[in-house]
Image (cartoon, rainbow, N blue to C red; front, side, top):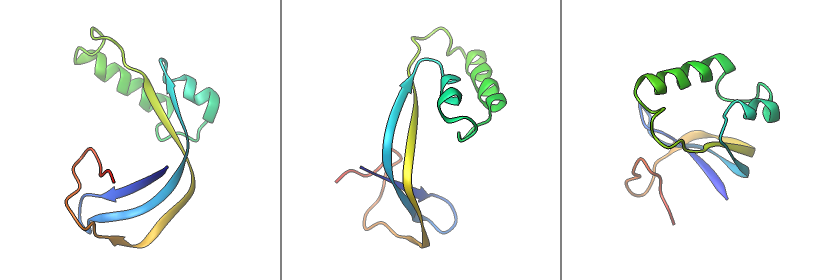
Amino acid sequence: MNFISYRSHEDTGFVGEAKIKIILLQEDPVKFFEIYGNGIFLSKEELKDYIKSRERWGHRKKKRKLWMAIELEDVRKYDKPVKPKRFVPVGGQYP
């Protein structure tokens, strides 16, 4: 399965792609650091700040959802953005 990156500001369009190697789900997002070390989009401090901000907005009371990590391989950035042939909604484009 492929993962396509889309830029929604300035020179919009598809800007790169990668193959999805694995999708991991965890109840505790800190466990991703045990698996990937510092190879994660956020630092541990940024993650902790994000979790605190969610609690401030009342997300602690709701049923907790699983956290997702998507491990990519063969990442490739396009030389120029590729314009989609049709509108792409926020949720993505499906074949």
